[in-house]
Image (cartoon, rainbow, N blue to C red; front, side, top):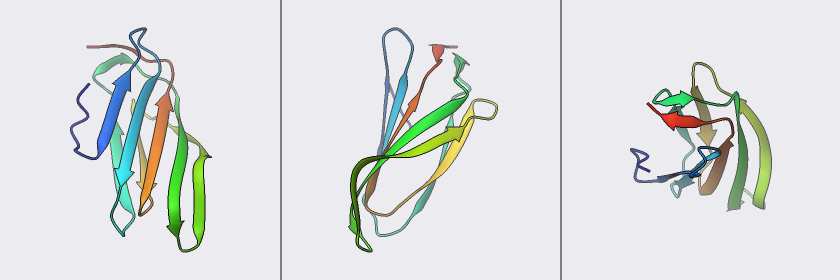
Length: 97
């Protein structure tokens, strides 16, 4: 499925849930990202996030859970650190409108 961003992959299970979004930030700066899921008939309440980083400022980790981000009106946002890959999983999705 199209994400609308060259650095973001979006995938939806044939069952409709979960929605998986993967953001690759290969720059040297943190970037804000906003996700709008209003085209779905229904979206979950939270997005669970995992992050992989490659030694920025001595911080190195693989697929570390970073918590849950609340969805408000089927939208959520996050600050994606420099040189990282962040995966968001949103359960409770229902087909696109």
